[in-house]
Image (cartoon, rainbow, N blue to C red; front, side, top):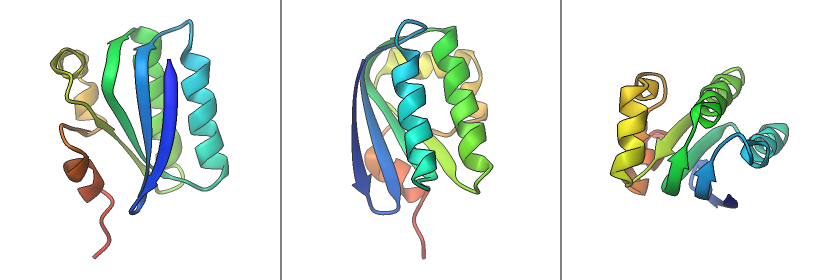
Length: 113
């Protein structure tokens, strides 16, 4: 897994490339923990370049969303990968975490009028 981060408008975008699984999930967990410790509570996880995600990865996404909400933040997922979107739909994660197909849509979640 490769992770890159950028600060866009009112949110941090975490770009994830590769697989999210039990073998490398600590990389993503550490990055989210680091963002929270730096008071970055509005997070977009860009999973467009994620090839696969296992149950451990799904569990960490749910936990991450819960953690940022404790600080009145929000976590949303961005992905153009239809297979990954289908996994979020089947597992009903899309009922707990908003899943968007464009960066513009995802950033709208954090727009301050």
